Length: 156
Image: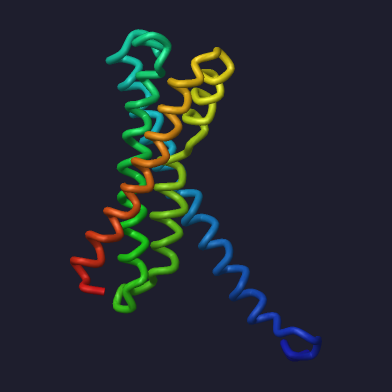
């Protein structure tokens, strides 16, 4: 019986399954690295700042974690342009590993969201708005600056 006896080609299906599995493993491996890095930053921050809610209720510890988000956004902006370069071999797999995996695990906004809601629900509306606005604006500036730097380097 040949592979093409049915309405689909088993070899093609097998190749697609291998590609999907490799992509999944690339994201998983990168995500483990990114999540571990973020956890390391959180542990270091907790060691440096005894109270997560210092300075009149402003989440100072989370500011340091948001530095990770800002740096991560800069790197995502840079990497997104880097991986668009046609001369980079196997860019699809590396892009999944680096951007979706490492940076996706490293730059989550879950802590940001929780602290924002805590500030707003505690009645600190002004601090909450400032915290949300600065975090969002600085991350967007990070992505823009990273992409701009990559474009300058590769003269896109």
